[in-house]
Length: 256
Length: 364
Image 1 (cartoon, rainbow over the protein chains, first blue to last red):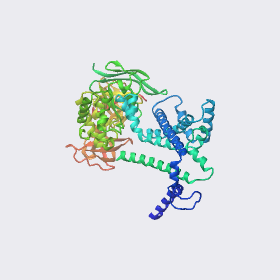
Image 2 (image 1 turned 120 degrees about the vertical axis):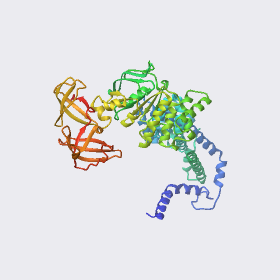
Image 3 (image 1 turned 90 degrees about the vertical axis):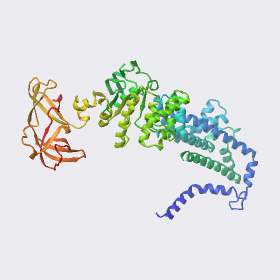
Image 4 (image 1 turned 30 degrees about the vertical axis):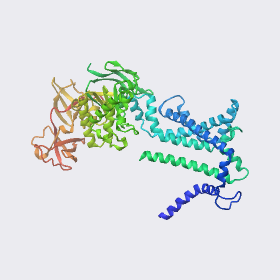
């Protein structure tokens, strides 16, 4: 293949992946309430987004759950990865396999089973049930991310540290955490994104008094896609992009 | 107390599979002990038992006379240099070397002083702020050694520390290790599968096979007086002949091998009709051209099969009349300057009498 056709092929791939998102972003600036035709540039929808207090509360809920769930899942998931890698205990292999099963099991199964669990334990649906559920489904992703980085390390590093007199606490603080830092951040970001856009599990486990963004958007589009939703989604996309770029910048800076 | 470490009847099993069996070993203070054996012979396990990463299935390990069999690694005054170096990739050279001292919570000044001293010892003071990935293999190796010796261990354990270096660097590092050991005045225990490395570094060599110690002795002893066939074959090249005792007298034995009879010293009380192995090192063999010999009575006739020129020596693969192939190493010296052998040439072979090693053949 020559250069031009190779470039064209690459562009086609990018187009396939990102064209829908750019269409959405473009329409968020469209000065028309219903028409799919371009009526001129406007920031009207962003203004109405800012003025929509209701939507802001919901967005805050989502961010709060996202940050807390990502932090909780990252802490537990990292510890799980470290113990799976470093220690031998009863049922270790089973636990390792179960983590992968959790990743591939359908959201609807997790959602319904969590709902049954909460109603059996008489936990009222709302903030806490939602947070616990999000932590639960994020943990395996963190564990897998952190474990794969751990598996790439020289096992002798930990023996060398022990040999030099380090306690388990010192090894964790001074060897494991610095080595795993990129994977821990990646795991956190992954959890945050997963939590932010989860619809199916959240639908089952949250209550009416604690609404979150994906569910709100879902209910808004049931009566047709409003340009306000486009604006909201553009903001979310921008936020995600900024996070990814920030992460890339951090790792790039560390390497150079 | 002359012995810094003593192993008494130490065995190690993994899932009922024996890795080490009934090991007795005494390590003298301030000696350079090298454990030599093929991979899978249990030599690394032996090292890990001493370092405390493994506990023996049975038997005791004494360190300075105290039983340390159950003592975890950080509480034994030994440090290990790993085969993969295991330098902490996120720390610079200073932090790597200082790690052990920081674990002991020493004052900052003392850490600084001792780290610099250790780095001076391995001649890498100028690389103090580098990260491990910015160092060459040899430099990483030296940092790994500095990181271990900075803790002033009683014994330094080295697990195949030179195996990933190239040949020339390995030679240099062997000499440096030897020098370092005498400078520090502590015991070094080095594990290797390289017999040349074992002979050139060690005060004493321990030869292991299948989880057992085959022989312990000075490099010279294990090379010149191997106690069994495995030791002889593992340490250096050797030609092995099957022989039979024809007659004995108090001092000598009459043996026959490869169709000729010889009178040899009766060093190990052999009995009549016993089967023996006669071991001859390639460098103990003399090879002469047919025209150079007047009286070939005690010599074997052979044909040159292969000539391998090695610079200071020439290795010859010779085929005896019986079809046995043997290896002979010839040196360039005043007796024989040309060493000009052609393939297929007929030659006479003999050995320097008295340099042979005679072992009983238990398999017959």
